[in-house]
Image 1 (cartoon, rainbow, N blue to C red):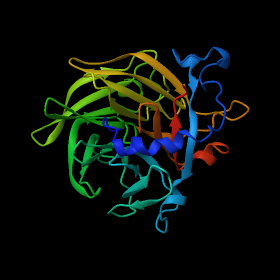
Image 2: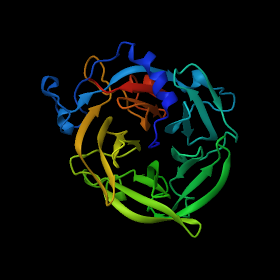
Image 3: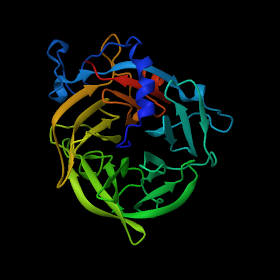
Length: 325
């Protein structure tokens, strides 16, 4: 979710790209797609991502106090992948080869961290959907470079349901001002029944100790996902950013363009689906986090899945995907 792709990450990707891609792609869960005409211009013609590598979080991290990691966000920073879980206050740090991992400070208590992003000076921010069942305000936790909690601050955004608020987070510094882009889980920032094609991102900045909404960005109507799980930004070097938005329910990814003067989201757009089974069924049912590792390589993190096989095989994991060339 960081707008900055560390060069150390990029250097580590050369080995990944030599690996064979696994799992053939198939149709989008919402639309019938003819793979022979998949060009990525629309959701119905989405291109299948190529799996490079993946591993269960339980294989990388000690789990004496945690039965299962419920991954909720991932961000690349300083050559490592950092993974938040909403059932633990301890942020995981994992190498990009997916060989080793460790847990940061904290405990195994419920964190309600729904997203994670990294700053350009080594800090982190985690999104908390709502403060409590009685306090509908979304809240943001600031963490130090070692992922220890520093402070928590409220946002001016409130939601009708405690677990249906902000689901994605990305840091951006513009003209010296720190911004957090917060992605609503549901269309129109409302409930599960809201019509598709109404995705929203709130641009937040800190004012007098709390995070205040400066702008509300509408995703292009073509990004008609059933819900929205996370977003990531990558600096294009021309004043704009490549934006990635992922959907758990749609098992899909959108790449578009973010401009900051004025704030706007748009094209060119490309749609991707996560790899399907040989029979064309969805197998990535719980993708909750996305981050750039390079121009054509992304890492994703999956929550546990209760959808049964093959979804459970891919749940509670970290994955590396490549955009097809």
